[in-house]
Structure formats: C-alpha cells, structure tokens
Length: 146
Image 1 (cartoon, rainbow, N blue to C red):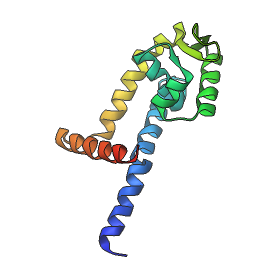
Image 2: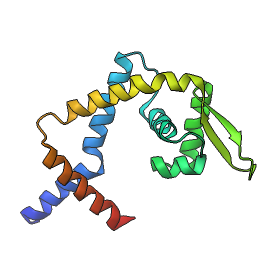
Image 3: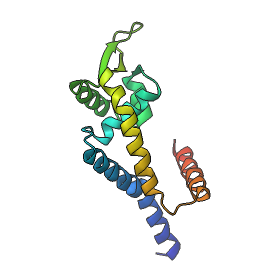
C-alpha cells in the first residue's frame, strides 16, 4: 500500500464520522450538564422544525438524512416529551405534518446557545479560511455521491 493510499484511508475515516461523532458527543454532554433532556437526534429534528415548522415526516427524513422508521421513532419520542405534535395533512390524510408544541420553543434559545458553544470548542485554532476549504471539499464529496 502506498503512502498516499494510507492518507486517503485516514481521510475516509475522518469524513465518515470521526469529527462529527466527537462534536455530537460533546454536544450531548453539554446538553446533559445544562439540564437539557433530549438526545442529539431529537434535537436535529427540532432544529429543522425551528427553521420551518410544519414539515412532513418525509421532509424530516430528507433534512436529517434519516430513514422513515428512525424519524417515526424520533417523532414518537418527541410527542411523548410534548415537544411536537402530529397533524394529518389537509390535502392527504396519509401524510403527517409535524408541528412544534409550545414546550419546544422554550428549548430553542438554550440548545442553540449550547450548539454554538460546542462548535466554538471544536473550532479552536481553526481559521475561517480552513473552515471554508473544509466546507468546499465536503460539498464536492457530497455532490459527487448524491
């Protein structure tokens, strides 16, 4: 194996989740330390609903890159926590629209602050230029494979 292949293998490991997993673990830890009793997966659903309330479960699948059973489970658990509610679509009753419940609004500012804090912790020593290059490279990788 050439030296270049090994470096590409390290890159593959990094792109496929090493940094993402470390950030998610830190964010979950920061949530727990601040009394936020939701998972990162649940937060990702809430995040997209804060951006646009009233998404279908399929739109949440697309936005979060999760499959239908995973989104169904996440929405079920968020309903139990009284953070979201399902409403049958007026146009097609087979489609559930997901809306934020009042309790979710109170979490938005706190969790977004914690997410920003976590991202700032992760990016210590990283320049804006490096961030832009990383975003460009990862976008090319994503575009190549979608």
